[in-house]
Amino acid sequence: MNGVSHFHNGRRLGRRASFVLLVYANVLMMATASAPSPIYPLYRERWGFSVTMLTVIFAVYVAGLLGALLTVGSLSDHLGRRPVLVTALLVAAASTAIFWAADGVGSLLIARVSR
Image (cartoon, rainbow, N blue to C red; front, side, top):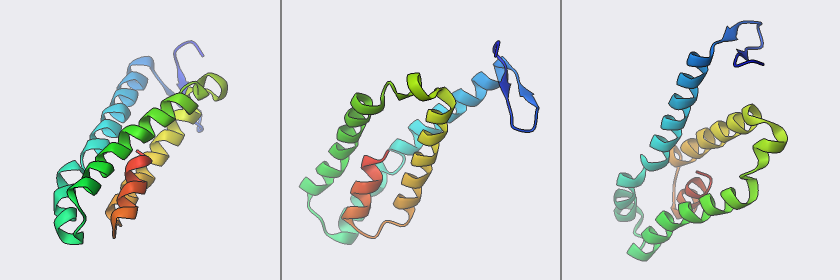
């Protein structure tokens, strides 16, 4: 493709714009991954779970990340960069939606591991 990304309507996105878009997507994903952290103590007070469970909620992110790196880390080599990036953004959006609708520890664990 010679450094040019194609949109489905025929318009092209140049190298610089593609790079800016990818940087923005990366920053957005990293920010949304850490944004709920300050809210966890409030959830702990509201739902009455232990400090140990709070630690588990934090640790589950690392377990999910490690699992993803070990299992799907090379998936983009087989499927292509774009499909994997779009899927990752959709999973991140779904995880954020689960955080918004969280009603207990189970929801927090699911949302956190899918980050």
